[in-house]
Amino acid sequence: MIPESYIQELLHRVDVVDLIDSYVPLKKAGANYAACCPFHNEKSPSFTVSPTKQFYHCFGCGAHGTAIGFLMEYSGLGFIDAIKDLSGRVGLPMPEDEGRPRQDGPKIASLTEVMARAAKYYYEQLKHSEAAISYLKRRGVTGEIAQKFGIGYAPGGWQNLEAAFADYGATELQAAGLVIKNEQGRLYDRFRDRVMFPILNQKGEVIAFGGRVLGEGEPKYLNSPETPLFEKGREVFGLPQARAALREKDTAIVVEGYMDVVALAQHGVGNALATLGTATTATHVQKLLRQVDRIVYCFDGDNAGRKAAWRALENSLEALPEQKSIGFVFLPQGEDPDSFVRAQGTAAFERLIAQATPLSDYLLRELATHCDLTSAEGKAKLVADAKPLLGRLQTPLLRLQLVKRLAEVSGFEQAEIERLCDLRPVARPAPARAPRQAPSLLRPLLRLLLQKPALAQRVPLGALPNNSAEARAVRRLCEAIRAAGDPPPPYAALIERMRGEGSESESDETTLREAAAELMQHPFAEDDIDAEFDGAIERLSEGEQKRAFAALQEKIQKLGVAGLSSEEKQQYLQALAGRGKAG
Ligand SMILES: [Zn+2]
Image 1 (tube, rainbow, N blue to C red):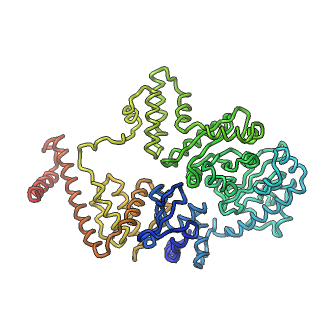
Image 2: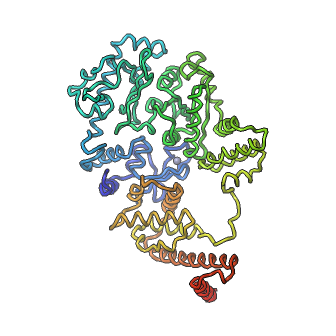
């Protein structure tokens, strides 16, 4: 754990404008700086950096964060690595226990070094293995592509890495997943007689290996275990190598195996990537959609491929922002991308990718195969099956499109489907019940708190309504500020403080981000802040009184005055008197 005080100190020393400017040239725009967003494609700049508040916000795609967040998003670094990078830039030494997986585990830096040395060793061994070379030749892999991907060979035998490391018993080798200790305490190489594919992070450092067995051994593919360097659900194979092609094509092709990636690269399809012994996760999808507008999953036509595609669909739903698209390609039975591109050629493969089945089509088609659409029961089942999937979608447009298609296929009305699936229709008038807190009341309060966190001490949390994202965001912000103690941390430090709190609600985050973005454009004048705050609090408690009054009225309508407790009657009378005075 990195202490929060360190993170605050670090954010204090780093200038987010300098940092981002070194990657994305910024132009002064009023009080802020602007550029075309590095996280989505755009022609006019909506990516804005605040020098005073030390955060960035994209008004196009919603990307938002601090210097730490920027490095994580832009370079694909993990939290610890981003902090490490920044600490090097500003010369603020990391606290002693940085990046240790356990109390006495080796440091990240030494693991990275170990992996680099192992990769070099395997790469050199390839030259000496005729079997491995002939395997790669059979697959049509040239020396150039083998070099581009750093493909190597782990020889047969049990302790080959002894040749590469003076201290074969070093804990780093085990922590990096290269060496295994058996029950008798004997050490041996994890990878033996395998063609080795180094897995790189976005910085180009080796963080893991995938090994393809030569011959008939099991398992056919063996990956590094998860280590402090390597989290399967985050990493993809081939990302640094694909970067230029991703930019050019604006599409990422996700395939099942590293050999597919290599074979496609060999045939000039440079924008393919593979997940590593795991289903495609929402994190993968987010990571890729930062770089491209379209993902196409290209899986084998067999059962395993269909299962993988469905998992990918499920995990894509919640990570899919507006204006991004996802497609699916299923290869003919018995084919994989490697065999397909070798047999049919690049143009045929590119055609498949261009004509990929859109996510909504695939989703409906797949659901429909489990329902008998000639019967009323089958149609109802279709809607019921779609319900959890629709609930995961974050994008109203795609949801609407799916609901429409569901309506066509099932014969239900669109409104019926929305009701059955508990979807709130886009423009239904608000129910005429207790007045909901107008968002406009709490928005200014949020902005005030972001501009002057010390005000959090004076917010009456009890007076906040329970029913809005704004109220939750105010509450969460106040709690974070109060917990951080005195003096209250600036906004950038608060963002980091709330990171990984396990936000129970994405919408709170979004609300906070939006408020911060508004503040960026329209900050309060320092002199006005206190008066604005007093006004906001006053309106808040008025709102609270109105809500209480409306609740009592509703109860009276249902149960009559006799249904009120004597305390409630008292409250009601007081409120009536107060309203008389006010109005
Ligand atoms: Zn953007």
